[in-house]
Amino acid sequence: MRALLVLVAIIAVGCGKPTSREIDRNLIRVTNDARLRTDTIGDGKWAEQSTFVLVEAENTSKEGAYVTLAGDLVDPDGATVGTLKPQSLFVPAGELRTFALVDIERRPKPTAKGARLFVRGAKIMTAPPARVDGVKQITDGDKIVMQGVLKNEAKRGGELMVIATFYAPDGRPMTRPFTVLWVAPNGELPVQFVGPPGSTRGTLFIGDAVY
Image (tube, rainbow, N blue to C red; front, side, top):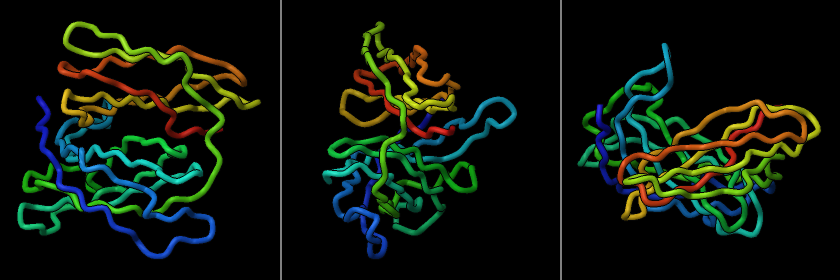
C-alpha cells in the first residue's frame, strides 16, 4: 500500500529540569520538517500497519548525547489521538539524526493530522564503538542509493544497527530504513540502502550497538 505522507506541525518543548549528566535540552533542536506516515512496520509475521512520525533532531551543543524524543499524535483540533513510543539515538555534537516515533499501540490512527513532540532526555555519553566509512551517494534513475562500510571498532563482536535516511526534493525525510548486522571484533561489512522513487539525497549513521 502506498504510504500517506502528511506534513506535521511540531512543537518542541522541554520536559523537566535536566540532570547533571545531561546537556541543556534547549540545545536539542527538533526540526519542523517532519512527516506523518501510515505504512507497514516490522517484517514477516511481525509486519503490521501503524502510524508513525519521521522527525529529525539536531544536537547544537559541544558534546555528544543520547537524545530521547517522545510525543503524541493529535487531530486537527490539537486533541491527543495516540501516544508515540519514545526513541533514543546517539547524536554527535553539531549533527542531526532521524527519529522514527511509532504509535505505541502500533495501529493506524486515521484521525491523526500532526504530532506534539518534546525532548525527553539528552544524556552525555560516548558514541557507540562503530562507524560507517566511505559513504557514497549514487543516483539510480529517479532514486538515490547509499553505500558505505560498517566498521566495528570494539574488541568483541556485536550486533550493529545501520540506519539510512532518504530525503525528498523539499528536504523532508521520506523513509528511514535500517538493518542489524553482526560484525566481528575490529571487523567491517559493506552496506547498501536503496531509496524510494523521488528521493534526491541520503545519509547513513549508526543506531543501536549491542555487544
